[in-house]
Image (cartoon, rainbow, N blue to C red; front, side):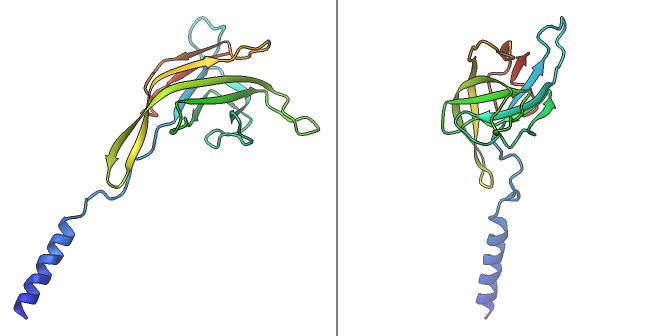
Length: 168
């Protein structure tokens, strides 16, 4: 009986000490791309809201769920595709629907290119994706409302910094 008690005590002790103390994941989210909008004509860098902005991923029927649809915004946080090296967004200024439900706003297309890197965080969090070598391309058309796209941070792993500045 004494041996069973000692064995039970050893099993309980090893059971409690073998767990990680932080089995709750706090830092386990892949960072979003932070885009700020600026006034193209201002002499000093001045944030400027995009009127009734709508953000739709290329080939998607719905808007990006990290952006409040058709509001005036100076900053958006948008996801990049983790299983691809390219993500394309349609950024729509003055978004509205006509009588048939078709979009009437001014649509500009921006493509983001990058390399992905999986980073192990912890047993509880698993892996997150860091995006490196970020570049952007603005599709030119006759009525671009976006005048310039500037990548200011080529690594996307932190949501506390601006990664891209869009001038309009």
